[in-house]
Length: 266
Length: 266
Image 1 (spheres, chains in turn blue, brown):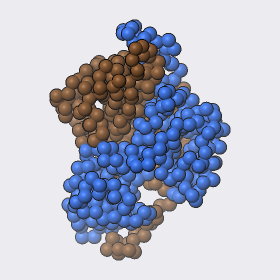
Image 2 (cartoon, rainbow over the protein chains, first blue to last red):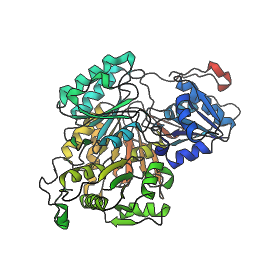
Image 3 (cartoon, each protein chain N blue to C red):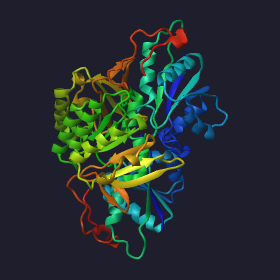
Image 4 (tube, chains in turn yellow, red):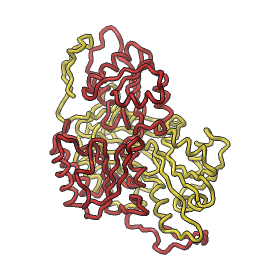
């Protein structure tokens, strides 16, 4: 019986993949995935055995990968970012449990973690995720919009930094406006906001703005939006959320020549 | 003027570091960090120029790294997990802005993302982060306990999956009991909970249990706790949060031999 490795390849740059993810791809007999992600992998591993599939129908893709893994030694199912965050890993476990495996045991499943979009965007923006944060997808394809609204309100009200995945699409541009209204009702207009498109990929765009200036036209399906908490500030163009609350850095630090005399709250 | 790379090395296994993080360490003139993390790196890069520092006093460590980066080409500051999640990246940006740079320009700072503990633990547990999640540190060293309580209540009430960092320490064992009481007031007793210690390191422990059975004795400073949402279930021993709400998999899928007839909600 084979193993299905569900591999998060990170944002899509060869440099941002982990050694374990790369090894799982290199040792796979077959690599399954959405054709656009496989094109990224093909640039690093031109000779692998790829089985691309069209966008959508993730259940069919996960099922195909499970069936291949029952017949091969090693199959890799590729996802962008982390394969467990809004990814195919959960679907694969669900399908394996739901499918009837007559005459052969079900394949093993392993999940290989990857750099999820929030971490990639955060590194490019500065350090916006330095304190507690909530990750929310604004897609109402699989989640009732009321659930998403409840989470936005709860996370905004409790001063979480927010990482918004799938902020909009052509079909649901008005949803992003609703989400913005919820955030603006709670957070100050000058709250720093980071918008990142195509992190570590061609066409990368990194924008630091503020909540009052955030507009639907700044986001699309390839964008992630990070909204600061009440402590987040912009320093030298970077979005920074301090680790501490109400424990500011000394406003008058000694110059660094002062050596041991430098004052700074932990 | 040099560059300070703030490098997240992931959970601590050579296989879980990204290529970019490894390259930043390999090209560094000096590698600064907490001695325990540097010991991990030394196993992969024995010949690097290490400058270890004791635990605690992160501000002094970040300041030293900044001063070294003003004098060298490339300095790496090592953190576990992702360097921006409760890490040193924010502190470095804050210090750079607060320090007086007489006679020389301040160093450049770049953040190299890494696999944060929640992602590492999730991959070992199954796919618990398949839907919206909140990351909360239970350490009240830098954050008032009231803020933490407010976040726990908000995230539990809005049905987020929870990733609890720094769940306890000898000094604040009672805090974990308080956090448990908050979660139990809202979530069902049978809610799946994952507890992971030393992910991808020697002494790794992966436990799937339920909220009613979670006890303070199961966690310590090296542990991360993932609490499922109302949809999370345990399948073949793995903790799985479906991506969809109220859109269950077909309870009676055709056997996989059925091929195209397999029924599964997206």
